[in-house]
Length: 206
Length: 214
Image (cartoon, rainbow over all chains, first blue to last red; front, side, top):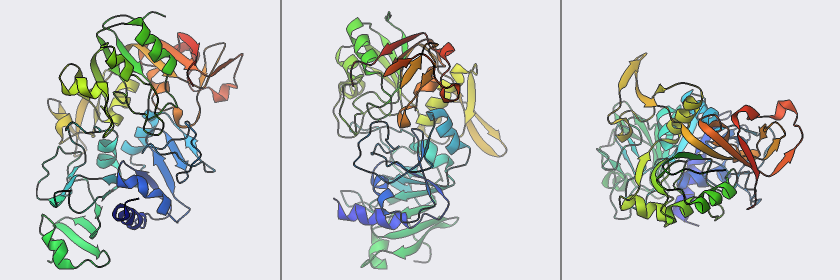
């Protein structure tokens, strides 16, 4: 268990409001479902599973979520084919998509896939990023080399331009607003000077 | 069941053995048909929840010329498909999953192309026609069809009507509509199903076989 990633996931879960239809992408987002405490929420998996419960150890091959976790069974759950499923997203019925990120620009451009040799491809991320009503990126604030993942301009290929609404990292919660990036909340024991130092764009009001 | 060289083949798959026509893929491997173009969500090695033998066996047997997918391979999993793609031996057409499945749906519904917002402003819109509707940009995506679709369902009745189980439906019912010849692999056959339960009408299905792998 990676404590930092779990902490980001737990904070991200608090962004979910009652009654929302929510999707979890690959990476840190797959850790969020177990921290969701409100009951009136519909989990959506792009493989056509709607209204499922948090992950279980049941290991039923016919109960897998979009992040390829074992999905929990829940009353009211239903199944769709992939075409209808992506219609939900493009049709504007997906309220929140939590996506992992390699880089996010100050304008809210998202890059979360690469064409490198170890990569997983684009999957459904492009659809969620472009069409979900709200896109929340959950990622570690800096990469393994210590470079900020929040950048002026993404160097990885874009998943979708100007799509990100909120960024949740180990340093805090940030809103993408018209004029740029705004700090909404600092994580515990994090000082604003540290955030400024480790963020690749100017933060509004800092 | 005959597999042809240089054919375009759809395979139903999403991240695990559920909804995967494993027996049919093994038969395709045994046939040795070469120069194949596969249309499948991943290029194999996608047993992320449970490891299982998938279409990577077709790459190992050098049967694949081109793959159209959204996931070439999962992170940190070494597959023969990934090696062949990276070495330039197999052509990769990467598509956002939602565009890919809609292209398959459209292909099965007699729609040659459609406009989608997904991919605009990214590498996926390169070389594609962009058009504005109601102030928003969309790109033209051509539909997909195949010579053959290998799909997995839960059960078939005597009219080849298909039912599915749980989250294993995914690509399968859509691919069933978009290929000239469709073979469904099922867990069981029954005389008749409740008509309300049927997802894929038998008119889309040419052949049914029983799963021998799970």
